[in-house]
Length: 478
Image (cartoon, rainbow, N blue to C red):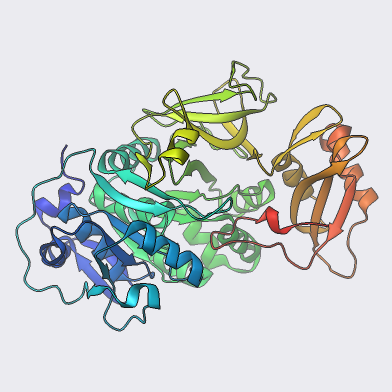
């Protein structure tokens, strides 16, 4: 296959990576990364201590140049999870800046500092397309995290498909503050700009003022998760500088979880700029996206990306041909974007596939234009109540439009009569004056069918969320 990063071969003094006050041009990145690559060449696998720093980006690029699979390690992992990841992936060394304090599970490995790499070398030959590029561990919600082996082919295919959907070019400057141990922040947010020959400005941590300054300084694209865009939406009425810079951005992209419709609307009303949503997973990379050159599709994640086949199936794996925007099925996908296997888990790999199709576990509808709307996870968000199949996501979206609701989650719990009853978990806008259960049920019934109204309402100070802002529904119980 052709090089993952053509711009490293051609050379340029254009900025490639900027983290705070540290910037590397393409020439400097090539020199630094090839020096690191020479030191790690021949290793079976390398762990990368994936802090939101320039060293992480350099280390991953170096591993890719060397043809050595990189295992991004979440610095926030607990002791047991980290020990599992290290034991399972068995890295021979760790790439980490010299002043980084490593936990015991990694401290015994040889350390390579990406800032002290020695002299640069010629770019190595490109490895085969099917060779492993990264091993990214899943969140482990149903057991120990599994290492998804991602090939160079999968990485290139998903980044090129996004370039088509988003009209992403070398002229783009991407701004974000995402963690660098997962697909969104690392593969899309760092490798994506480098594959296009553009640049990335990483903010270290999310802050509205930093976003405004980076976009005003030449940023053309912004990546974020719903929590970040919610903070943006809250600030817009009192922050004209933020409004101006967002309005001037070419593309605003939200991912990792659904962006509530009311935040979509607030941002669009203030800036004239819609937020694009896309859908992917660790095992599949990106599957769908709203297109930059298409109509805004609030509430959907757009159609399948080029090269991706997507189908909806029922509980017996029968394909659903409905495109009515109402019929719910599980998403299955296949294409060059798919992972190769779960490391050391042939059983799990086999269970996840059916005739070459990956079972995502995500439930969705499809409209007449082919746009996909995610309604939730099969395990936690598909509620079977009174003979109906109900997606929690659409109820959550309606609840979030109520002026008395700041946050909302919907789950099902056993009910002797209905099978499952719908439970709404609400963080009130004003804690002392929460909307009543009756008011919330009436609000949902006015927008959706009566059988989708919450039968039980429980109030919380905050919803439990993971590092990416996703609500951890398994932590919600009566």
